[in-house]
Length: 359
Ligand SMILES: Cc1ncc(COP(=O)(O)O)c(C=O)c1O
Image (tube, rainbow, N blue to C red; front, top):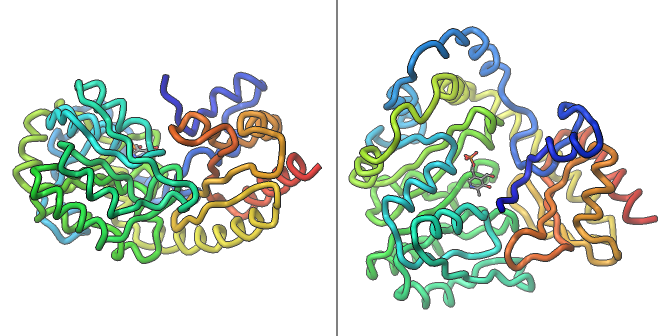
């Protein structure tokens, strides 16, 4: 059974609401997207659905390559970044994969589907779920692949570029490939201190994953990408299904990349809203907020008998959807995750959390 955020249908069925009425804090996407420029372009190009999309995503590839200042030969696109996780695992067929946990469940599902075994590296709650790099380095010789989500979903913990380079360096010595999932990296202020997206083009054992679905709020249209060395990209291209990225997703992504103003404006607003949400969440003494540099918070119910599923149900009655984190390995039914949303939506969340938890 797979558990993810964004399941608006579940509470709309349960309480008879229209899905559009639900305020979805469970899915950590940019609340200000999709950009208006993208919607306009999509409406104009709806007729494209009559034709096959460009299987190579050539225009988009060129655009993203310019944006990242790398060669288009270092990029491959997928039907959401999740498709690429499965493609990489299916291609590499690693026997043992080291994964810091709790994290996004699809890594483990992909590894097991391809006959591999997951070696969990438990992130310690006492250490705010930060990775103990020295201990992690010790395990590398016994595995064939490493998957790291940076920043990590759901803990929002972050690993510095320096620490990652230590891990990649040691992994290289033992012939271990490293997949870094950076789908939430674009929400971070000083991402150059953490992101290895550009470096992935010239490091042999490194594959970096990113997505348009979070930053531009294009989750329904499905588009993600990998940056890696040219050889890896070539091999993945040979394995991929034709036409895996639809024409509207390609058009939307090209337009989104051109809309620099949207990005600047929405990230500025998001930061402001995040400050407010953090301040207000921190004032509720029944919960503990874990540090976050990105666009969501992991929260633990500490001074209340309610568990995360009960809290989710209480909030759902008010058309608010949060991510119950009990399904994550090493978390329990006291944890939930909320995304930063618009000022008004954040206020509704705070008001309702106070009502449910402080009475
Ligand atoms: C850490 C992480 N990686 C990848 C994905 C998949 O994103 P998408 O397939 O929409 O690009 C998700 C979705 O929630 C995620 O949380």
